[in-house]
Image 1: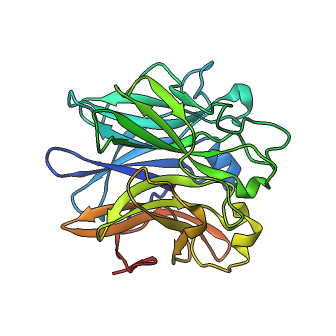
Image 2: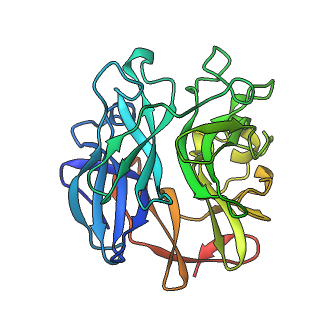
Length: 315
């Protein structure tokens, strides 16, 4: 578990170094900021290391907001880490700016030789393309312009890279049905081409599919994402499901995701979860969100899980 005395902790993502140690990168903000909106607008990216994903040693922050004016001079949000062909680490992360009051999200990156000292690359590198995704407008249903939470992985059939990200499409449907899996591709991890989404709006859908990840569990490819009850469609909320992390079975990591097939991993407060394989067993790890009306803001110990053919359940 990671709990900080002076900071809230929420979304997290991970990398494993050459010595087998787990590096956690996570959003953090002072516990003096009680309201969710204030926390998010002051978030930085923390860093901790562990041998077992349970006991963590806190390290200096990986990234904080940039000096103004910049695309990420308000806050730095959720991302992912990969290692490039030259052996350098690449962190892709979300940024918001003061110029737009934090309402437009974009994606950029930083590089590191040791997972500890990070250097920004010129950005942003990915933003919502109006040919495929909704831009900020009066019809956004109260949502900000979504282009965040990049999940980057190598093309399973080639030499390039793919990025999944949280996005929304324009359309006549209610905004809480229009969340989609955004998609971009790159040959070198620096120049990206934004492509159409890998899912479609659905009456049983969501206003935002946050913190996406693709992972194989017991031989089945799964899309994992999260969405709070208030951002889900009316039809989805009427199902009375327990849990804010959802999985969708797919034929592959880029297989057309049918969001209507999403089923929750049952947990009273786990959010922004990630899947990890530890000694051949898949685990889920995320942060405790709201319990009994209060924000908890700490990372849980890994929970072993399995795919039962229809749902992700505790092993």
